[in-house]
Image 1 (tube, rainbow, N blue to C red):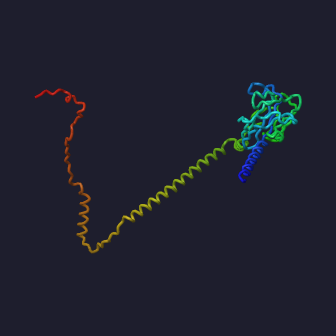
Image 2 (cartoon, rainbow, N blue to C red):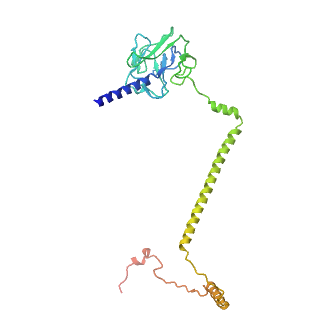
Length: 293
């Protein structure tokens, strides 16, 4: 009994999570009158509108509905099973309002009227829950109605249309511009770069010196331990009772032993011929016929 309950609860959680993600999809930009602007995949200039995934997860809008009539929420169902209906994180998808749904998933079965206001609706897969809507006023040709920043609830006229891309084009870097204003000659950047490099070199030098000191200490300890193990105790001889003649004789014997080691050396060099002086493999005499004796 518990397993079916857990299974149903898990399915409900998955459905609710998917529904919550779909609700993050919103209208982002609409172009009603298209004379010299974006063309579709058939090379035609038609009205289009853009949906934006404001969530930080991939959202599949397959099964949702698009309409321009509040009384007909199921006017156009976005086909299921198309991988292109999966909108990546913070990305866009473009639909063409050309009333030619046979041309593909993103060609809806209604169009937009440039002579009057148009309202677009996005409904959930149940066909009743409204996800988002937008009312587009009458605009000039090739001018869109969109959000100044992707996903914000404010709308304005966009003279530079941006289909399938960000409405606010970030062509500058605020941090870089601020740094260039504070350091126009680049001296500060050069000092920072040199400081970083020399700091790294100093840290490396200190590390190498410490490593060499540790290795030297370890080697010295090993030598001392080895010397302690190999050295044998020696007896100390008292030389006060030894006559001077004996000390002189011992010293002379040690001197003769150290200096006269190589007085007699054998300088005879013996060369013994142990093998042939040539290689017989190429000799022709072994291939000649030998006459009988």
